[in-house]
Length: 109
Image (cartoon, rainbow, N blue to C red; front, side, top):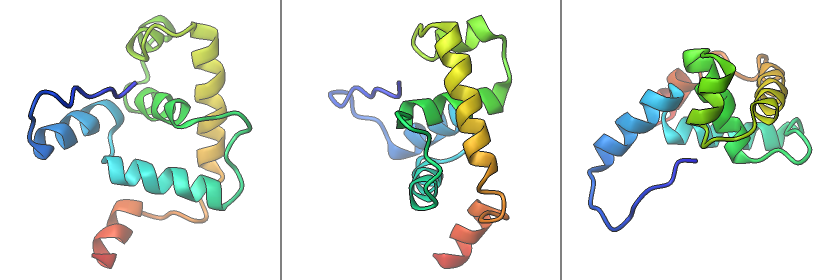
């Protein structure tokens, strides 16, 4: 879903900005979220990182199902809906673990 053309040189700042525009968080925050789901054993069975990105994209813009599934690469709208809500629920189980993940990461730096 987040396919990059490595043959074209781009600054990391513009890639970071593009990632944030789609998913409302940095790629490092997305990775930490994924790791927290794995560590807390609440990663949905057969779920993958692409499904997490779909959920983050949906949470950012809350668009119509057809539009969101097209943005996700033309996936089936029913599959999109299924995985988005499974991952939103899984993310919600991390509520006790996360207060402000970005603030926490800034403190650790």
